Length: 294
Image (cartoon, rainbow, N blue to C red; front, side, top):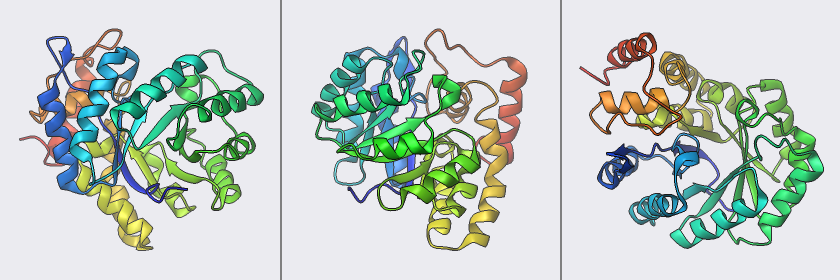
């Protein structure tokens, strides 16, 4: 079991400019996260628009992030797809790019049975030496990995952690109770980070930390240290910003926020497109309240 599965892992966006990965902007985003002292970075997740990246682009993004973060913090690379063979190919590619671990979403669209899920992760384990964080996000995949199945996955060599984004605090609490030292549980939902850390989760894979890394880190650090009153206060302070990050489909708000802050171009790849005006205006108001834009 690796010892880095706690704290704040920023699910970093992938900046584009003129249709290509903006390497300069990506490097600046990574440096900003390093300066804020977050515990790790997740590259090429759903926040990083991985579904729109070619294999060459995915390799490039992960290699840039790993080069900058080397020796300073671990980098997890999103390699999951809805096909086991392509997930394995991605895993091999991103291991070569320098990733310290893999984020593997439960296969979407085809909705595998628990036995199919086990087979998927078992096959992956036979083709990579990297530790794996399972990503459970039923709102995107169409299926929910329940605690009993997750604990069976934890028996597979290399499966060490889970990013839990089911949105069900009761389910997450049950998973934490069962997991013990076998599986490290992190929140996959910024708005639920404090509640599930009160139940024993060890941190968050965060969208909000793209825009406010130091404040998210302060909340998580306080919770890990048992300073729950301080953590609760920071949670309440962050909650309006957390909600703003999901005014429309992630990563539209967070990338738009970073563009408003002058850090990236406001550019997406279809089928993602710029935010609708009412939600964009509401996002701008919230960013101003938090002092993130003039």
